[in-house]
Length: 362
Image 1 (cartoon, rainbow, N blue to C red):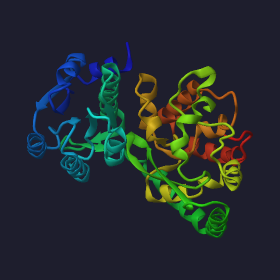
Image 2 (cartoon, rainbow, N blue to C red):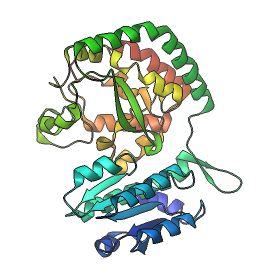
Image 3 (cartoon, rainbow, N blue to C red):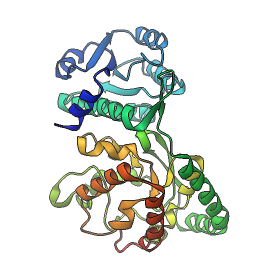
């Protein structure tokens, strides 16, 4: 029995609702979906808006699938409104594009949506993605949220003791390390052109997306060269594929950046993320969106139900070792999400210091 079937049996009252805008692909997709997903069809954007506005917190759609051709500005405003509203911000949004404009759709919508697919569509990929979102909601309803007396679900929150420790520890380190961080910032500015801080969108606990900070260790626009370096991905050995990306001897890294990475000094700005509550000191590494969107199988689901963190089981056991595999990292992430505790966090923190000096340039 797979994980999704087991959870469905334990939560028979749960049904996932999908609001679908468009007419071109809805029939083909609807036929591929299992019985626990209800698709409500709309042909006009105004009708979808009206439908969402008239829902309560218990009846709002779980997923919006929007066919995107024209009205990009109107759809963009609609989606921003969805994400700005506390009632609807947890709704997952998937875009289906029918024109050769992936770059434009990504630029406009990537910060606000779960996925963007462009025609011709692979039905099985979209079906698998929807099943993962279904699965995550069901798991989250059981493990990553609590119910109030009124029956409303509250999102997962870091335990109070863990959060208090994060604030105290990260705040203290920020004060003590401020002079060192200022020196690093100056050296980065002198070493190469570009911003001092590298900021990217990462998916943490519950797929929550936030701005993730590091000292810049690569040349500007390094992300655009990632596809060319796929053959060097440490996780995808022998031409295979992998959700994670880690490039050995990455040519995009600057001279100073290599030192910062090998000593893990590039990670220091993440103390601001911890202090703000985006992540914890110890947890599963928050993932770039292009990695997170690949994690749709049963084996991956649990890693997003634990805290996101600067350091974790992966860092203190396998980081920088050439024999590290995709499978091993998945197991470590799932194990932490299932069993994390204050004492486990303390052990990981004590083991982190010797793990900071990497053995390989990755």
